[in-house]
Image (cartoon, rainbow, N blue to C red; front, side):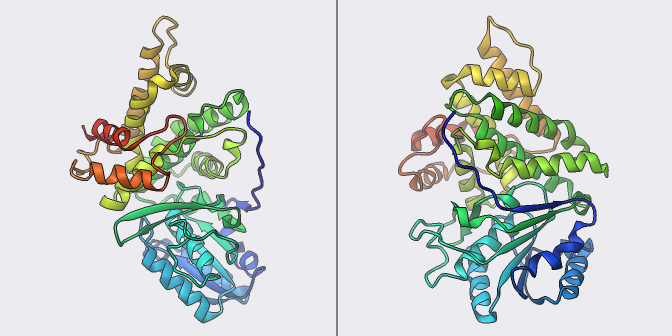
Length: 390
């Protein structure tokens, strides 16, 4: 196990009706609030009215900025940062899923910065502070509600980049699984895929002596597998939803990567897909991750066997470990398919014409490589995309 420091200061407020406490929580950090959200879903399902009522009851002065899209755009971040400066905003409240939260974090960072809003994500500037950010989570997926990460897409060049810094944890996150029951099944499936991928990125490590976190990650993966199908099929079982929603938060709050180094190659490959083709992140991960597994499996067959036997209950065969490892990947793909997710680029309507460009862009941010479990160069990424194509 590696040395580590774990410090996550996000306050989690979890349970039925807790969104009604948002006004009291956010006004601890100021009265001038930027309310940031996506499209019309929070207005259709009543979340907007509940949040606005709580804010007004707490005496908040609200400035609104909607319009966040999946794969959140830099142009809206720039608009939000300027709005914060012009309106004297003291705190930002994100009501939505990962895209809204990531956008809110980027806005809060740039509200305190005089340079261009892309500087941080392009690694031209280092974050030092951001306005306080609060969250009302409406989609289980990204884990951004208690992570130190933000991912933004620059429309100029179709570049999607992640940023992380200790100052980027939200101050609080309000999580009521009941607010998520009405989500379209595609969004639920994409969310479960994203959660599972966050767990996989941490699971595939070269660090030894990490049985405790291995077991926690495996438990979280099994929880997603055991409940995701019912969620996609429309269950309103609070216990099923609450297990997966909480797993999604824990999957990306850095607890599960304590003492170990994860991979993250698949995420960075997928960022290129969603930047160029605007595919949903969870759908892109469902295509990329199994292809990555097939490409790197020989690096550590025993770890793939452990994944297969512990998570998907594949019967172990000590005389043919590679077969067991392959069955684990097949079981993972079958799980994704059962949620209605695409398994190939062809199924998602994505061609091969940009493979070289995407591979080149994927390694730019990593100094010519991506991934830690297995270091990937441009040619490796092209090979993985070819596996994912069909």
